[in-house]
Image (cartoon, rainbow, N blue to C red):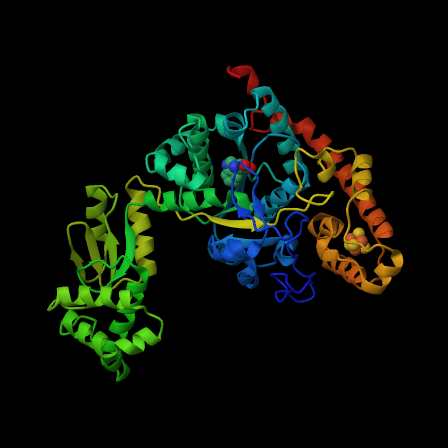
Length: 546
Ligand code: TRP
Ligand code: SF4
């Protein structure tokens, strides 16, 4: 591992070490953009954590039962909100996994990562979906419908050949899924042009259909929850993260109620302020609950907002030392002082937002225990946050709402091209297509750039640079499969100088040819059964336009 690797201290057990940032053109370039339709580049995966708020996968890894090798090896490096998925897998509860493919060319070994991720979640008990983003390919990439049909068929065949179970899971294309179209339309009500402009850099020249393909993708992402809310994971490359952020936002905006924590009649929007207020409140009530008597906040109206303001003023320097900035302290003080004599008590608040009157009334009715009803919100004094969330969702789904859970995502690293630089569909030598002749696959691996030294002698002395080597990536991402020991052995032998590139590439090339041969054989078997599947792979005949 090179010392500047972001993951250098993150190796788990005896699994191969997580991969560093690969890619010749990534080196030195300070260039991290996430553009779903442009050239997404990630020069430094650490930036995705700091700047975009993606979380490190290593942190949830211990919670995942029997993690996939791409997780163990750090190829899947990031996530948003994966915990509900890990929990569902552990507790054997309902969850879903979905991803989509734009049929713009042949499926290649980069797509295989996503195929494998969907299939793995299906094998872990998830309801799995694979979709063909044909509307997106037509509107954002300008492919004709007959080109799209050809590629769609190829993606479906490879997904099946790699193990997707079409009896258990669902395959569909955007253009023929009426339910997705309807959902897209509803979601479009919550999104406007300025927002798409800000997220995707759209401008006055952007085609309307391209925008429609965005809401369609939002609908794809939420489609597994169309019947009922459940945790859903979307495995994608980090270039798709802007879509995930929008989808998570829209899922929240569609909700009837928002559940928050409150202390008095006033609203505290700012999270820091809410945390501070919570601490002040806990400080005020701590004495009472410690000596066994009931918490003064429970059922007793003797504590007032002005008491909390006084306590905060008195301990202000302690709170500031604990990291609350002056503006946060001032914000809380002002609210408490304005509320003055109003009693202060911890409560769970339901904000009415988009709820219909009937749903709002039903919620009020359904809240157990002491409650207080306001114009647009209800405060519950005997419900935990979690109970409140469940109740809000239940009332919503009973009254015609979706009750969406925010969709989760996982992100895999982009593969380095075989010729160095990016792996690109438009440069055949840089990638291996799943349709490549096994011999061509063999030749491409043999011709690949390596992390080897100038001479065999130097290699024996210094060791190879497996971290910079596209061939090592082939082993880690694909060729070693489940076999962690084998992947580790290649790595150690390489950096230890025992492995020379000629032999290493020969071995990789043979494994690649074998893989392609098996894969294509399996594709052929599936090709004979394609007619039996639900997915329509011939839409061109029914469509006009260019
Ligand atoms: N936009 C994706 C791509 O460019 C394809 C896609 C469409 C997708 N709908 C999706 C991916 C839903 C994940 C989930 O490849
Ligand atoms: Fe890459 Fe193999 Fe050479 Fe190491 S020995 S640099 S892994 S090709």
